[in-house]
Every structure is written in structure tokens, then in C-alpha cells.
Length: 176
Ligand SMILES: Cc1cc2nc3c(=O)[nH]c(=O)nc-3n(C[C@H](O)[C@H](O)[C@H](O)COP(=O)(O)O)c2cc1C
Image: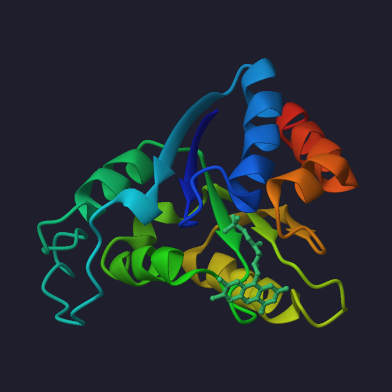
């Protein structure tokens, strides 16, 4: 399978990207091909809501969204990777989601996965992001493969010591 991983933390080697690293290791060992895009380091402007890409199915704003569309068009699976920011995905990832406004129908039928990290450990901390992801997967027509919501994992060290590291590795390794 061709898997596109959208990393979205300002911390290049932070908690969420560390979690994604375990998933990547498992998926690569299982023979999948991985394309990693660090959207936090790409040039992605906010959506203009112009709808001018509706006919072509491609956003008309000439920044790095074209590279993301190109990678996603060729992918079998998309993996969203984000730290929890005030119950939500990072703004860096939300920019990308919004900018897929004209493109998202091309995602239909592809697989999707969410990997998220947060400091807190209470029941509520992941609930809004979980619901948002479920809604997005449904609206985009994605086949939801699952989520790893790493609570109490605000640093790379906490991820490494947590059961989520093995869970992410195994999830990558067991993908059909
Ligand atoms: C702006 C901001 C908002 C945050 N909001 C939350 C939150 O609502 N709940 C929580 O548990 N952690 C929150 N955190 C902590 C991060 O989720 C946590 O440190 C994180 O998973 C770091 O991942 P990263 O190293 O990949 O950026 C927040 C951090 C920042 C900078």
C-alpha cells in the first residue's frame, strides 16, 4: 500500500512525530511504501473559500497544497498526525483539511488513520478530536482504519515509554 503521513506539529522530533515514527517502522517492515509530508514546514495558506477549484477538483491557490494533493491522489491510505491543541487538531493540520475543499472527493475509498498525542489523561481530552475525525472520515468517504489517541504523552520520552508506541508499531505492521 502507498501510505501518506501528514505530520503537523511545530516540534519536528516531538511527541506526535515520535508516535508516527513507530507506525512508520511497522508499516515499512510490512512492505508498505511511506510518503511523509511535514505540513507544519510547508507553505499552506488558509482556505479562501473561493470555490474556484470545484470544476477541476484542485485548489487554485499556488502554494504547497499541490504537493499534498499529488501525494494523496496516488495514496491508498492517509495518516493524520497531530498534537492535541485545545481539544482539536493543530492549526497546521486544519489548514490542510480546509484546503482539500475542492479535492476531497478524490479521497473517497482510501483508508485513513489518526495518530494524536496530548498531555492530559482525562476522558474528555481526546473526545472532541475523535468525534471530529470520525465526521471527517465519513464526509470524505474514507475507510477508517482506527485511531491511536495517546493520552498523558506530551513529550517524545513519554511516548517511547508508553504502550502507544508498540500499538502504533503493531498497527503499521498489521496493515493489510
Ligand atoms: C497551543 C497548545 C494547546 C494544547 N492543548 C492541549 C489540550 O487541550 N490538552 C492536552 O492534553 N494537551 C494540550 N497541549 C499539549 C500538547 O498536546 C502536547 O504537549 C503534545 O501532544 C505535544 O506534541 P508535539 O511534541 O508533537 O507537538 C497543548 C499544547 C499547546 C502548545
